[in-house]
Amino acid sequence: MYLHLGRDYVVNTRDVLGIFNLETTTVSPRGRSFLENAQKNGAVVSLSDDLPKSYVLTDAPVETVYLSELSPAVLERRFARGFWEV
Image 1: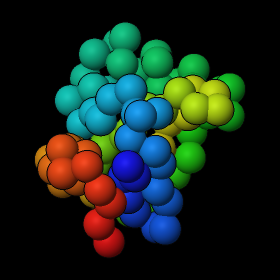
Image 2 (image 1 turned 120 degrees about the horizontal axis):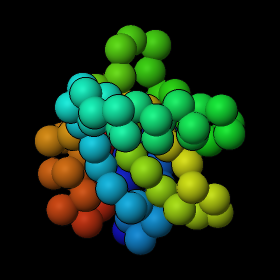
Image 3 (image 1 turned 180 degrees about the horizontal axis):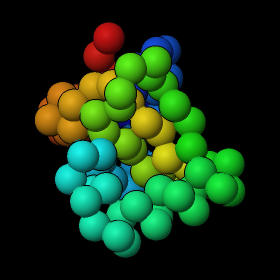
């Protein structure tokens, strides 16, 4: 099944490692460090012109962080339904 992340991006649900709230994750130094390292390694794909609300971590073909303007609750609901929505 697939998960629509916004801006015509879909990922296979079996490749999703987690869906995270960007605001709460960046409060901790560990969360900020993770995102900074991903940015340095070119593993971040921004799907938003606005401030992103969430990020999705995938592992195929390599670990990638997708920044999305959709809320984590919306992405989790879509993920739980087992299909992608527009």
